[in-house]
Length: 560
Image (cartoon, rainbow, N blue to C red; front, side, top):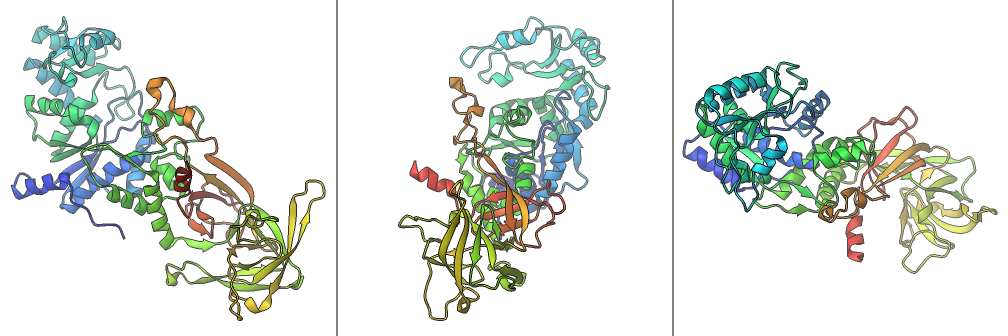
């Protein structure tokens, strides 16, 4: 079961506001930019915004911050909607876009000019940055800061009408160029963009900036608590200043929380976009990506991601969460619901020499020991089987307990077998066949005389098994923080794991798995959790490894 919501500073604020009668209902919003796919970091914000609204009987709006037509695409809009619904949340009738408010935002810009709080600046983008100053030095007033209200109104209207090229003019808020907070040094609130918008077409030639559009959109929607990640803390004074200058219907409270940083990956949309465009991964939904679509294709469940977001909680300071915590949540969820099956990824033939050549039988196998209601299934057993090549060693080390010459092991759900002989390819010396005898008295995997074996191996019937493709995915980066060396001139892509994907084309699986439904989760016994990929075709299933049965990387880190 998912853990109950834990108390945190945001819930404390909301509860205090409700107790004081400050708000009748809690209204939050999730405001993604439609310029890429959502990733696991967004899942934390989704769960927080939708979760607190639901817990306090309010609502959460889904609002697309579509203020930059050059970077946005309907593909991203549709993907974001799908991801939010997949996580289990619903915005109902409350779907909005910043573009819904373009007329209002323009009117507010006119109002700022009339109140002497906004002006059209004709500095070049380079000079605006130069005049802005530094963290230790104040900025310098623009030479256009004192334009008359009439001139500003005229220029702003001409900007809207498309009479100027991009970069020639911007509308800036008139605040304080000497402010210690750089965000308050007359920030740009409108810029000229001659680009068609995916919703408004060519209607507009000026577009609001994020800081300007965000706070006003919150106010127009009646948002009570505007929950933002920590990088917007320094933007809060600007958020409040804009709302204080204008006749808005309400003044939402911005509250910042620490964003989710996960090791062995990157969370920047710009970096994720580079991974796709430069061919390091196949697509936004490549199972190595931290995108929700990638995690879904890999086999992660919505419940496991919500459980993960609940476990990490809500904090005021940034930290990096270990990937193993997310993988634990995935294992915990799939362990309860995934059907157990047997599959052999690297097969070698095992022949039971004292079993009838044409004989076969059906053996009962447990579907999931965690849930008896899932029942059992029958799997075929015959003289020739496939086992994992790694489960046999001709000259094993001391702590190798699996099959070896003269050694007895248990075949899962079947019999005890003892290795008698090995057949090798005369050209390559590779083992091509392992010959064993079996004890008929051990049917079901138990010995009537009480003798014990130290290993149980999975297997599939060579006569009945189906073929499958398997993709073994691992962490995309070798370094816990791939971007930490960028100041040294080392690009984050230099830390990509060259073994993050291993493709195996000739795996053998139980019969009955030839045509599984894409997205179905299985546990391949002893191997890990796997999910049916969308690339599967009838008779040619493809399985993605979701996660190993244990945290293999913990062992690697311990060895280092």
